[in-house]
Amino acid sequence: MKRIFSGGPFEAKIGYCRAVVAGGFVHVAGTVGQGDTVEEQCQSALEVIEKALVDAGTDFAHTVRVTYMLPKASDFEACWPTLAKVFGETPPAATMIECGLIDPKYKIEIEVTAILPS
Image (cartoon, rainbow, N blue to C red; front, top):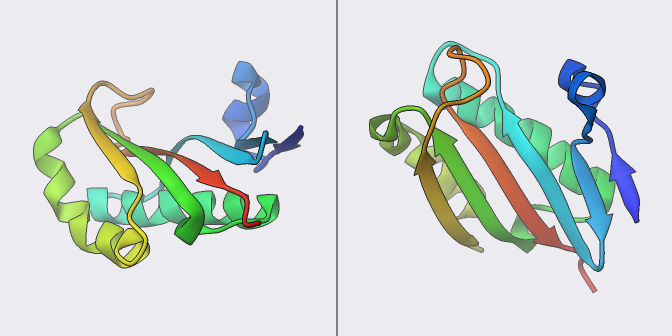
């Protein structure tokens, strides 16, 4: 098993890491992004996730599962063009959940599971 840390402040404070590589899978923790709009936060979160995937030895094309969590479900549609660009050619199974996030400033949190290429 391999643990990947991004150096974010919550990793040590809460006791988790950005991703865990285990059993041929890469499990990336729920990730929020920076920015004022949901589109900016979505793009930022995907950049953090992409780095974790690359550090683990995989990429978005090998993502098998994605969960989107948003405080306002109506914000999700604004993210679709970005998500289609990232996942469009190799779409994973996906779920969108409307829920509260750790801080009201966050508009989206994204969690992915990917496989390691053979």
